[in-house]
Figure (cartoon, rainbow, N blue to C red):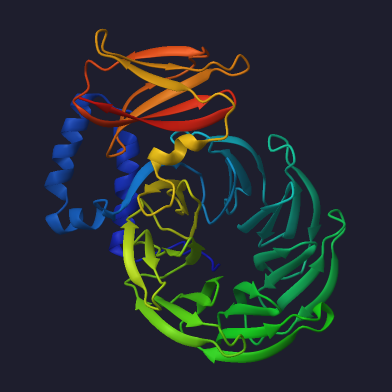
Length: 442
């Protein structure tokens, strides 16, 4: 991915950041001060200004935000852990087993820009623009330990892993291949084989597709790692900065507000199928279950279907800051939102909605019952080796109604006297496991 903008003359970005900071400030103030400040803001900001900062969404809802002190620039999700490439703050490891309350477990400091991160087999691999290619032992996430740093003397942009082979996109050095069999001592296998500056890449079979910032989309033969060969170049002219693929489909995000979809049925000769234009830069792309997620900078994140060779908008969410990266799994959508931190979203577009999340692999699943006489919702678990840590109740729109922390019991009851009839969800965090149950009140 490309370097985030440190300065922006765009009114929308400044207003969004201003609005986000005001919301955090208001949360800590008395009600009288909130009312006074609200009246003051209304008198200062014009209606057109408000339209630029109000959250806009379709088929996506906010779950939580994990704040950071510098840009959240890259993301990787490994089960219940999120790894954030946090620019000058290095690599942050976050517990997301309770997506409503993400908690930092540990971190690795960086001297400069941590940009892209991948986790595999108990190791985290990240591109540090100053240090180089960094390998971290995260077998114990609470105590990460740097195993090695490979310095290219130029800054790495992106990483792709395949077994014990690491492909590293290095700014002016093209594609570099490392043998990482020995995590403490990576060995360079080959270097080069590209025309311009590589920002990201994706692999299919023996072919590597690169987002070449200077020239466009290039195709590289990696059938022989010691002699990787540049095969073809397809001029885009929009400064490609990210790339993703699924099956025959290849997606390229362009810095100059464009997105391209190709058919790679003939690997050496991608055929363009569709294009999109945005009002801001498209920074990141990610494919999950026939959905394309795009981090569109100041416009947040968007989701598109593509199974009919045409990109069709299915959902979007206007995040608080500037989105640089996006990743999705069957549970949630995760966004590296620059100074806005890591944003976790829920969406009806995902295969597993909140209603199906109760299929968590637990020996004894918690029981939820409603007592019509006492008006209480009861939660209990029969497993003697497990207990309820906390419960969060939220309505169908995702708004939290009440929270109970530090329960540490195998049975708990909560009153519903203050709730209106409707559909609600209980997020139950256990000692071993986490799941959501749907409750319908009449």
